[in-house]
Length: 139
Length: 141
Image 1 (cartoon, one colour):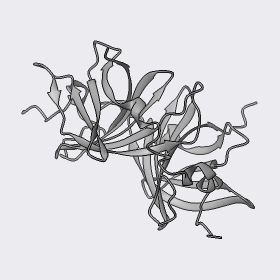
Image 2: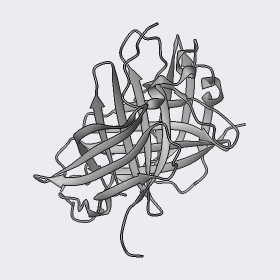
Image 3: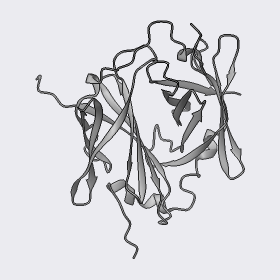
Image 4: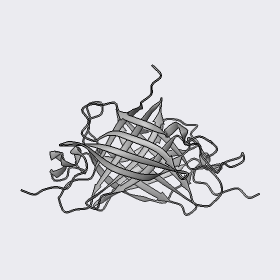
């Protein structure tokens, strides 16, 4: 069996390759740890037809704005892992694109947001990083 | 008065309309950055440089028989609305395309440490799991 191509040692896999990732660690309702955020307040992560979906609720001047669902790509913590540890996805609004890179760290969802403006408003594209906790009813 | 499109409050942040908002702090990212973990199986080092009116990123991966030079990527410079540890530094978004895989990265400085977050997508149907990684780098003197 030939060795797969790689760009760093962590790309090399010696065990049997994994084809499906278990997304359960990501699925749930995530709430921003910052109650004063001017960005995304809540994220609902769910699975539909075998694909991970995100539904984002952002803070607007008159209340929350529902961005609707979008499909996300799922990522493991390494090339042999079986459980998901993060995701990427994109919302395209026409005037701007919002790209997300999310990862689980110490039980929190750390969401890096990249807002790229495509209109002629002169606004600079910008970066935000916020923390989200999964809601539960254990206590 | 111009009505701006928005999908969240921060799209209307006044600082975004300041000339050079994204580029203002990008100089802090320039330089050669070395992984704090000398046993890394990921990225050994990264060099961020001005390239005409943009910024280029050169990465060296850890290999079996020596370093692996990645294809040079052009970076998108992003303004950072938040301060981290009293500093406000731009972030970079860069994609490295190898054909058999793609590495989508973002890079920023937090408390003087250069942080690379990497999302690897395999395109070769090798069955390897797409994966993410985060590594830390210090500035080469």
